[in-house]
Length: 295
Image 1: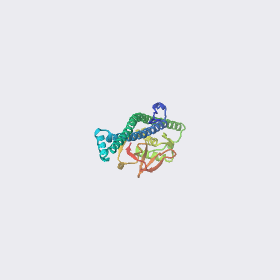
Image 2 (image 1 turned 90 degrees about the vertical axis):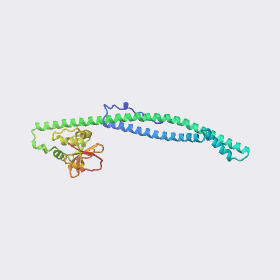
Image 3 (image 1 turned 120 degrees about the horizontal axis):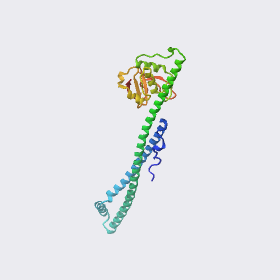
């Protein structure tokens, strides 16, 4: 019997050092699908093993000991008619029944041995897949962080080049926005200036943003450096209660998969998703909230 097919994907299928986060994410999804299949196979094998064991246990209970057999024979003889032929016929019928049950139990026992071996194989396959999934998840997080850092560096380089070009052309200093000296207030002012600009994954300005890139840019105007990665920004900031929220505080959603800037009155500004733009939304926008942080 083939207990489980197509589950032996391994890390050699993908070079984590060269793969993008999206490529690793697809590989991870494949591994998880294989594990789900293996788990279903294991459940089916266990159900079949339980059924075989039920047959074995029933035969053992009814015919497996001298006392059990004596009880059945005695009852059969006592229930038969008084003449010898009737009693002999009853015993012969019992012997045949016992033989049939023995063969059934023997077959069930052989099946149980095969199923037990198959279960051991599938359990090992699941353990191997669990290890591969852990490795893929770690590689995905590292790739995502590296891509975010590269995007931030590219954005900073672009911003520096734009600033240099502006300075060399003698442009009016009034063309550069001026923000509040208070970092939180400045962050809100900056975020409002980006309203309507497009969401682009990995972007951190000047005209396109993702959620953490917008937060990074909003605090950069005050000289505060934050990492372009939601998990990192969570670690770089301090926890506060919802009741303590002030404009400029950060709200994290969906298992740290998204973040926004609180602007007061139960609203936030965020860069939502591909195909959307930087916009104002309700604090409770339908995504699960992980917590509230202050820079």
